[in-house]
Length: 279
Image (cartoon, rainbow, N blue to C red):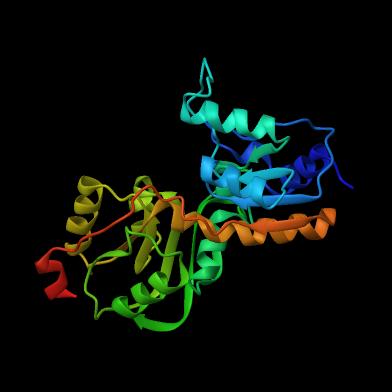
């Protein structure tokens, strides 16, 4: 039976910590490296609900994409959200590991999983790493055949987990698209890169008003591309869990479970009458 340290070694080999951004936090947050692991729960966020799920399925380790302590903490009383998570984990002998921007950038990581889920083929990094061109930020590739932007947006809505956020689109729904750029998580910093790569459409999460507006204004000065598809942060990164879980299961011979809990913080969405009419 592998130990926590064995699982960490497998994950670090697949998603090298050296690929992470300098500001990021990755690795084992809670747990004993010598503890034995029989079952692992994979999830996007280390929330209390996810910890409870791990307790319910008798998992020894939780692997998440997002770190619990990204912004640090000087105190972790049980009366705080993060303190409550840590106390629950320790009380039930469950470890917590995460792979964040290293998994974003790695080959076989978050961006590739998102592209694959949406039917995007022959992908390469949108922004290749200077050390290894096969790894880097985002991915860009092509669809199996041209689709209208509206048809492609419907595929995005169908293939990604359902959220209150849903799928927002900026562009001509009848325009044909073939090349697709994707970036899991908050990706409006790479709008210019998607345009420079001549993507027909850019799929990401957390697009803010001003960057999105500026990008669309610039696109409209040319051929209108890239069109924008904005999804929930959680939904954009969920597809990675299955690939990561399968890799660990094969490498370590342990049971792995992919959480289907929706950890997107928004719980409802009400479309305005104008939005309903335009749909």
